[in-house]
Length: 201
Image (cartoon, rainbow, N blue to C red; front, side, top):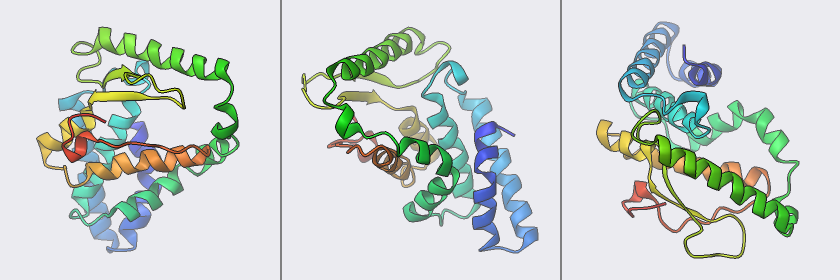
C-alpha cells in the first residue's frame, strides 16, 4: 500500500465504519486500494520523494479513490475533519511558528524565496520528463512586498480531476491549503484557482 494512503487509512476506515457494516467496509476499502494503485501506475508519482510537491498528488489519488468508494458522498467538511485527524501531530508543530512575527525578518523572506526559486528551477528542468506534469510556477510576478507570492499556471491535481471526472471534489484539496496556512498563523490570499476555471492559482 502506498505510504500516503496507509497514513490516511485509519481515518478513512473510521468514516466508513460510521456508515457501513464490516462486509461493506472491506469491499469499499478494497476499491480504494485498487483505484489508488491504478492511478499511481497510470499517471505517475511526479518524481516521488525527489519532488517535494508530489505528496499533494499522492493525497489527491488517495482522496479521490476514497471519494469514489463512498459513492461521492464525502463533503468538504468531512474532508477537513479527516485531514485534521491525520495531520494532528504535524499541525501541532506548525502551530508553534508565527508567520506574523517572522514576516518582518527580511533575511527569512529572502531565504524562503530562494527555496521557492530553487524548486521552480528544478521543476522547470524535470517537467515533462521525470516529474511528468508537475506544477508550473511563477514567482512574485507582481513584485509584492508582503508575504510570499507566486502563481501556479498549471496543476496536476486539476488536470487529474478534469481527466477522471472529479472537478466537483478537487476544490476540497484547494481548501486544505487555507487550513494548513492557519496552523502557522498565516493567511492565504488566493483570488483565482485553476479548479474554478480561472487559468491560474
